[in-house]
Length: 191
Image (cartoon, rainbow, N blue to C red; front, side, top):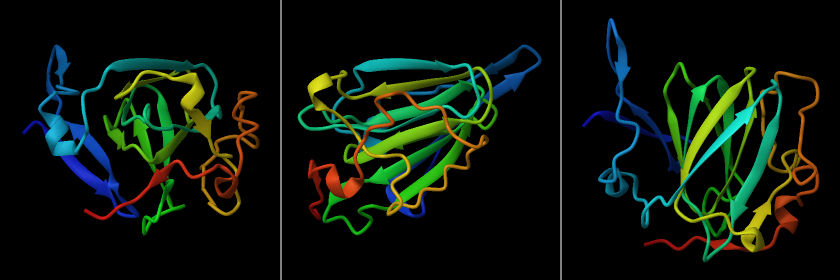
């Protein structure tokens, strides 16, 4: 298998994937996604949309975002230029890790990817100028199912590793509710 797969210790349902790079004097080649990985990663359904985000400045924070059923999304996040501090929060009521967060640096240099399952809020802050993030999603964008959680929810206690004093936020991201006020959209059931 041309991929290394690990779980984040504090959120075992979130996977960190590192595809192998085959390099020589010309450059490199890497399989960054294969459909037969769905079973390995426990993804329900297919990825159906690719998104590409460019951020010019350091310290831009996007998140924490999620979509509700029936348009909930699995996301596979990677960086092709620059670096981000990627954060995931478990928002599945009844989960042993409900309200817990984990973060990982994802960069063009370290070639890591993060698989964010449905039932987790996701966000990131840019660590370098001119950062480009690509991510696959398992459902298309659905504005009526688009939700978020306050990036600075004190009860979550997220260490954003901010490279600036105050992050740059969109108007939308400045107005998300705290997790406790966000509603119950996902429930955890043991299988």
